[in-house]
Length: 323
Length: 286
Image (tube, rainbow over all chains, first blue to last red; front, side, top):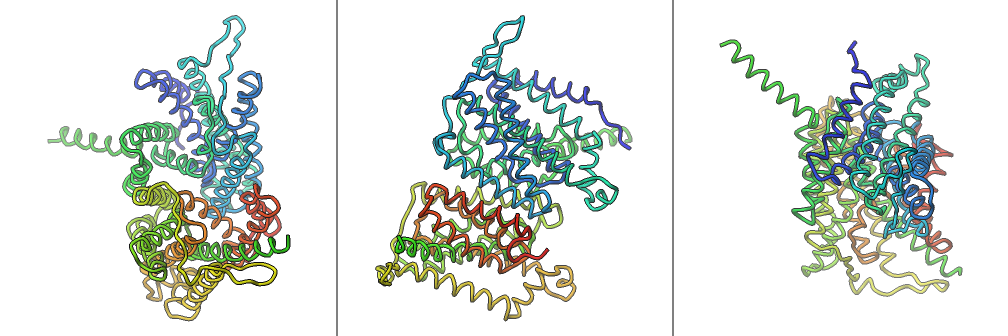
């Protein structure tokens, strides 16, 4: 059996990445990458670990964003309360959707998550008083954090907000990594490979998968909340099904073989989006072509690219070693 | 009130026929490839815009409708041959993502060619006007719309149930490997089926053009409706989509009389109710 790296070690790597990132790129881009990194990690838990091909994660991202947005725009609740409410709201939505879809397997599950995503989208679209409908939910404030002994931290400062995003990112990373290697994670893994056999061993596949779905929903909700705070507006696009597709794309482009895959995927996605939208207003066209090319020619994602490069270098070195 | 309700009922019936036609195409593709076609909405929108373009170019409505079928069908064949077929061996997540990318590309190509402004085209003269039924007026185009959709569905039904190609398609849906063993070229069959499904979506788009016009959001709107229709009809059933499509059209149209703002959400309520009472869908098998 493969030895697994400890959660502390992996989280330290994630933290190191989070510390190094703002030195390599504009801080707002780094913030966005971490936020979408959380979103991609949640989707990774479902798609790669549990084998639940959810095409509706944007719904929970959106619910979290709207809940946090509403709280921070209309009330004076502290930051932690807003984030907790966002996570709870998204988890509740995920529980309801999960209960109705998880017993259906394969394509049926995927289509149901998609349909529920659209249902929640249209709810947000119609419920103008709360969500702002097509215009989005605006004037979202970033509340100050009161730390006893240290004073207030002003989140409207980009660096402070980045630190908040980084803390949340590392916490979610550590929690999900720990969960993937817990008995629950092993059951999910087993159920992905053979659901019937896992059930016949006495594990409740349904309960494990529902729990994973709820956890992923909550994490997506937290990502949505941070997203709403980052731009101080919650646009309706963030809850649309294309955003669910983006999440799956991030998981695939990064590579499904490692937990760092979705983080790399989020970085690639944010970077591509920024780059493509700079050169052309019709950037989704380029993005679509990029997706098609990746799916056809680089199924293992960026991690496979690393592996290929390593093989190539390894072979070169071997040739030089034995003339 | 009764006249309004009757008018909405007829409206819903006509729109429902369109939903049925589109979802039928999705159902064929799903049956043959066992993959939900995420680009289906884009093919539907492509049909509407091609129909518009053909009429702009001076063609009359009938040939424009043919183009609305043929162009998406050819595009669908290309998408299947160049992408989906190559990804047959891996997990279907890759096919999904490929179709997602295709939908993005098609949507943007439509915007590049026709712009973001919504377009509308009038029905030909002989379809203008309405029949007076006494209690309500029935626009002629609505009748044409429903009849065309019904005729197309009937034609496809004949094709699938009564021809050699159709029996091969059914064999491909039921037992792909067995059909292959019997010497049926399943690869070409799947391409033909995908083209047929995409063509039906395009034809629906063309038929809808004089009714609702063409807009950039029509594709993703229809995609979710077609998915809901398929879930309500039952995934295992090829024809369940037909009844479910009409049902969804009527629900949506009639509910817009009473609660206009909720009519988009209500079809999902219908979907939830269906899967809670009959998890396999109205006509699906367990």
